[in-house]
Image 1 (cartoon, rainbow, N blue to C red):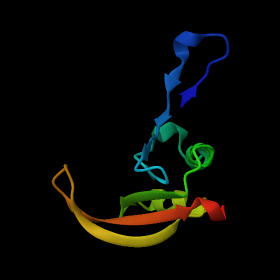
Image 2: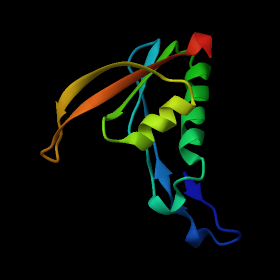
Image 3: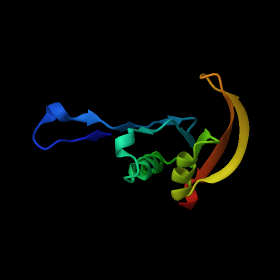
Length: 112
């Protein structure tokens, strides 16, 4: 995602990123998303979800999965806004040396 300045491409700057990892012919995992702090609370997270959901439908995928650290309430709110449903959690040892539960959610695309 880039913020476009009027008429001056030298001021274009990335303001966020996201990913979608294909797991098989029917399913994908929505990977990390990041939006620079200055651009948060503008609806961009929902936009990133909607873009990935439309791409998944174009690919005729049937299911999407997403996860977040239990403490990441912003990620939880974002996936809830677009209809993901909680499935389970597991404990993870993170690369930063912390241990925290990961919450998983899914979205059945044939219902959306």
